[in-house]
Structure formats: C-alpha cells, structure tokens
Length: 236
Image 1 (tube, rainbow, N blue to C red):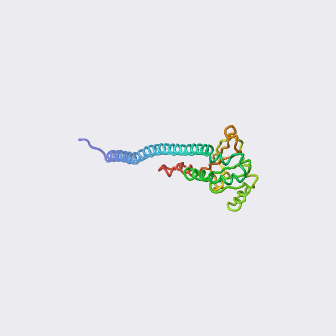
Image 2 (cartoon, one colour; image 1 turned 120 degrees about the vertical axis):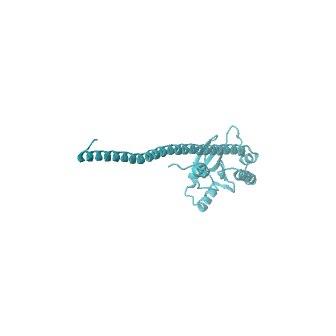
Image 3 (spheres, one colour; image 1 turned 90 degrees about the vertical axis):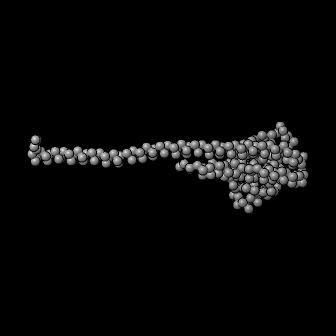
C-alpha cells in the first residue's frame, strides 16, 4: 500500500486544480472567440454582398439615366428637323415676307410648335429670326425688344437686351446642345438642356436666318439618376 505524506497530497491537489483552471479558462476563451470569429466572417461576407448590390444597382441607375438622356436628345433632334421642313415654318421664314405677312402666317407656326411641345418632353420651343429681330414661342410672337420687356416685367430678367439677343444668334448650320436658362421664353430663367439648331443655307437659301431652341427639363434626367426612385440604396 502506497502512502503519501500530507505535503505530497497538497501538491497533487494543487496540480489538479491548476489543470482544471487551465481547461476551464481555455473553454471560456473558446466560447468567447468562436462567436467573435463567426461575427467577423459574417460581417465581411455581408459587406461584400452589400457592396456588390450597390455597385450593380448604381450601374443600372446610370444606364437608365444615360438611356433617358439619349432618348430625349434624339427626340429633340428629330423634332427640330421636323419643324424646319414643315411648310408652315418655311412659309413664315421666307425672305420675301413683309412684317405683315409674318403676322398673318405666324398663327399656324405657333400652333405647330405648341403641339410639338405638348406632345413631347420639351418644356419650351423658341424661334428667333435674326434678319428681322423677331421671336416666336409656343404662346406668343413679337419683336425681340418687346419680348425682352415682357421678360423683365414678368420674369424679373436681369439680362440686358443686347446680351440676350447675342445669346440667341447662331452661325448658319449650327447644331449643338447647351445647358442654359436664357434660351426659352415661356420657361425663361429655368435651367434646361437646350438643343440649338440654325438653318442650313444650302437647304434654306430662300429663308431668313433662324435659330431654333428646344428646351428639355434637367430635373427629369436627375430623377432618372436618383437611386431612391429605383429601389437602390443610395451610396455616399
């Protein structure tokens, strides 16, 4: 029979206690570490999924906005061509017209551009006849000086007549896009994407020099690019 001294028994007891404490501490650490590791893995995996969704959604939104803009611009180009080849347009623009002839004929042209405005994305259509300093919108027509007076009175315009007239002048054969708040009349002062086109001299040699302005709303394009309108999370 093996006998142990009290001192020996005390040492064995302490060794066992230390062993139990180590095992307990290790188990406790594992219990803490495993959830933390799992949380980190899930967090990074979820973050990657969310980032991919944001990138994908934003790509769809940008493509939608690009398609919207392309369609609007193409529509404005087609509209400008259709207006300029219309007989009612050419009848008013003929160089042989007197001021009275234009007044008598302009009603049908105003009706034409009004119909184009109400059945399209355009918010305004304005025509400036250089040679006689005359302007036509979808609601009115008059000499540029009188139209400018109306803008100052009703739209609080601060641009002077000469500066406005200069902004309306375009070389013949011009076709371009600008962003402007000056090239509309009924919607004067509101920033818009404007398609500007002047007559081609080789095709309209018998007509006065003319600038045609078709204004498209900027806000429509901005709304098309707004992620919140497409159910996409907004990135910051």
